Length: 625
Image 1: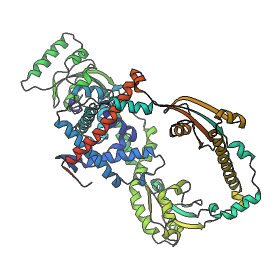
Image 2: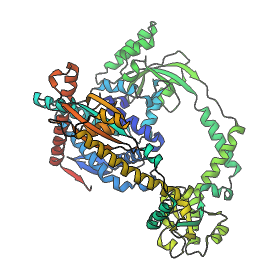
Image 3: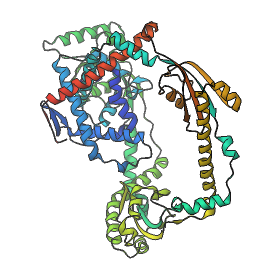
Image 4: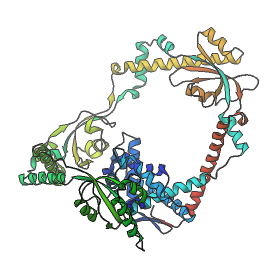
């Protein structure tokens, strides 16, 4: 349904649809994507084409959410939208330059392919089937009109097509293929033995005298951080619910509105055949012919598949799914009101064309029970009134707490709870004291040194706090008993590492002198391994050892021997005996294809980046960023 929406979505690159629709939808949820910025206010222009402020805001919101998803512990308030605007605008400019370059070179997007792709987008589906209402809802919530969405989608698809066109020009030479194969397909033969740290640690004993001496010599390592205890007042809508009164007539009005809305949600399953209007009026003859076929007993779904010009529903027999009043143009709703289930309307004209609509089924609405919904509605109204009262109370909190001698009097006056934190350092604590704003305020000069009350801090749109210092716990030396175990582990590790290094150096010298890894390992009762024809990207070997082996110089007349400390504390002694360069000619045809394609794509990517940069430099760009 709604052919203008279908016509506004052209293209053939499914991956771009995922980027434009599914990724933002998954990150935010549709309610969070909607932005109220102007869709026409210009933020920049490229060769006379505008990039709107709304487009910039949407892209900044998406970039911010991607950062938050990547760094889950990051506070949203720590990300400055203004700092994101510049980099995001530069990316939008590059995209616009590429889009215009694609248009200048005659690139275009096929209509029907984009219709089929839209049918496959999960977030446009209900019960696994494309749903017009769901589609329109998502589109609205993403902040798009049909025209702006069409422009965005077309531009991104053209950019993808342009980039693919450049990528397809990449090629590789035999020399490049051989060079890459010599590196990626290189194999190495090596032996190694492992000197474990655990037995050495277990054999080491540290005396109390050694622990005390280390403690006395390194007191700076055992200082407890400065800590503070703060008293604070929080203010949220829940704190104000007791101060608001919900009128009974308002509760009744909302209940009636909910019931009426539910009653209005009676839905009808509708199918249609749509013909676009033609200047010569030929569409009227065609619609008349279709009606005659219907009267003769032809199947509506079959005729929709044959004649309907609403591509997204034609393949489904014209089925629009279940719709409610207001979902369709008024003239179609009026026509449906006159139909019984199974009947087909006469021709109905809308801005989209001429329709024949069929009423397939009706679904009655489920009306809510008043007793079930009344408590929730009352709570919603209380929350709403409390939220409306919040700004006034925040201002009152600011006025009263400013230069207040204590927060206790502020809490009493506003009938709020005065709370006291657990001690916390500059690394933060638990609950409210893990908030960066709270930590910064608690350790600020006015609060920590002058003892004044902090400013009212915004922790969220509906959550503020004000705090003052209750106690400062200076940095002090921890007792020996507190750190004894830690010192013992430090000394054991230091001694074990020295012994490991000394033993590794001794074993390396023996291997260099002519003993094999196997001989040394057996004499020393150590584990050893041999690895033959090991490839650079072998996944069966310890990653640290593999990287080390492939960083070692190639052996000449004798093995190359070295030792490596591992992250787990063990040491290995490695003897590299042979390096065999990869040979492109010995690869399978599939491997050759993959390698040559890699070389070609690498070159094409480099060329594309240079070409895109040149296009940007030559473009007429007006932007403050």
